[in-house]
Length: 342
Length: 262
Ligand SMILES: Nc1ncnc2c1ncn2[C@@H]1O[C@H](COP(=O)(O)OP(=O)(O)OP(=O)(O)O)[C@@H](O)[C@H]1O
Ligand SMILES: [Mg+2]
Image (cartoon, rainbow over all chains, first blue to last red; front, top):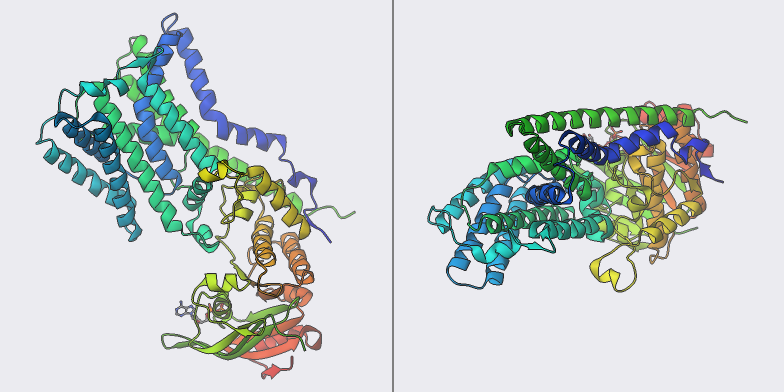
């Protein structure tokens, strides 16, 4: 006896649904390409060059690193808003150590460690059943306060020892682009190819289901916070390296840009869904718009307006597509429910 | 007489002052399908939770394949070859069939990739397909996300996963026990038929099955024996062929006197 669906449709999606799924899954990439083409024509001949493309990637890198943290957090089912505080605190810790004469590698490890620790603490507190938004807003203000304490309230200047991971270029490619490439490569492999990564995504989608097969869901939720903390710290260190100083002031702009990139990429803020490469494309779109409009001589605030419009349209389109797809699928399974008996 | 796969004797369970189960005796044999019926609040889910280790009874004895066991957690029950399938929330919607089937026992790529926990998606898809084949289930490609499946297909996947786990984790000397709590509650006619076929197939494989349902036609179609609870007490335990719809309804509503024949 075979428990088979009586409908042949069940093994292959009809073309129109497959097309809608494609638009939902790949639309963001198409959008980026369209933007690149648009600006290449609009800003001719200043936009379409290798060096300008590298500028865009470089500008996207910082946002992309923060967005990787926020994105991994969101995929694992939490929203960590402490990103900017963690970034400020780790950069100040590393900066202080460098000023005190400790070796750069030690300072960087210390900076990364406090970020990871912050993520761990966020995760542990949230485990008590508290709302992650509120908890991480709390740690955000706590950490930026602590950063000011460490830095005596002032920006720590003279961190030229960090330029190797700031303004430096290798083979003509900015240091940040290398860093972001490594982060996204490792992150993507982790989320899609490793057991822990796949479970992390699963926990974001349905913690109860994961618990029921005997996996400790809470451990993976904690891991989401830790990875977000690590990315935030890295972003903080990259920022310090870029401007060769460490500011204890948390920059709220970083979290908003990161969130925009994440939402643009279609990562569900409810968890369980999303892909890192698309988060990068989200960050790249923000940088492309700002770059393209600047070249065209459009005042920078228009870039902000455009970004907002894009974000909201992306959400609306995504929602519409998802609804249409599931409606079509219901119609389809309607065929399955009433097969023609031979 | 065969040793029951699962045998409960004199089970009592109190929720505070509510006595949800009142000295219930219950057993299910290997390959047997027992329909567990009762009105809302009769104690069906509570009894299933005792069997699955989610609740500890206040008093009573649980034997699996003739050996007395004490379940402290659902893991103890699942180690003893008992799997519960919940009506909802058992699959990760955005992930594909293979990932859902292998969740918690993902296969890794060979050395050195296993050191990094790199999974073998191909192997996972192949074993998923083989497992579903063995159960005679053909739904959709293994790479299809669960959210794109119909309700019946999803339920079939969730139940198959439980079946695979009891069949493969078979160090227990019996064929496993599957507990189903209203597996067809949200399903239409044809979808229910999918689940029905799978239940019969699992019984053929020797798995003992406890089926909680409000769907009497389904129960009469698949069950070998019918047990009815009424306010925490067992009021009927009869072979399906020895009873009829009206009697069962009588027991469920309390209109008919208790009868334990099986
Ligand atoms: N966690 C709980 N705490 C207190 N009382 C409970 C709890 N769970 C169930 N009960 C009570 O125990 C009794 C049996 O409930 P149970 O859920 O087992 O019924 P059921 O037969 O599964 O009903 P249904 O058909 O509605 O699912 C009911 O009176 C219910 O109110
Ligand atoms: Mg119930």
